[in-house]
Image 1: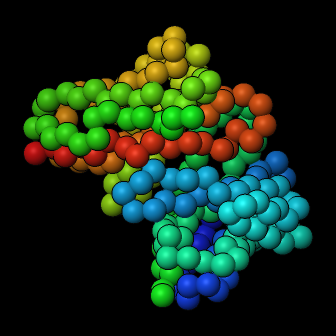
Image 2 (image 1 turned 90 degrees about the horizontal axis):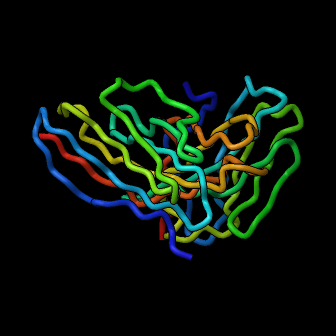
Length: 112
Length: 115
């Protein structure tokens, strides 16, 4: 079972920051937070991951609370192409393991 | 660099038949995993292969099987197809070792319809 809770849907205006929350109150000390997204009819795409520090890459920023029980994915300037289902996943950094447990995710709609 | 390639992209089968799906990982990637996506159950892990060995398996019946070849290409097979096997089957690849093992690269999937 997925260990995360996300809102089923969100809307955001084009050009604004999209902030997607994720609750993972039972996260263990060795578990990372991963974010993926799935654009309609495509395979999931890796976005970002982190353990306890905030992370930023060319796609997004990840803010993890100090107690690590929740996190927020931030798309700083959302575009129409960011419309997708966003999945928050927690998993341990097991050497070589590829198993991801997906929840239902958040369906993000970017409006013009 | 070419991405993960899955074939066929679409196929239609009837109940009782069997199907084989193919996946070519990104060059240099040694780990391949398979996922099933349905509207009701979402994305579910099927199995994972590394260096031709199954490393992990999800909670699916024995009708679902897979294998990996020495060139890291992988196939999955579903025998005695049921209507509920209609789904998008996704393949993902990764280096299989080292850090950031959760960064998987997915293909576009094979959409199977069972009639």
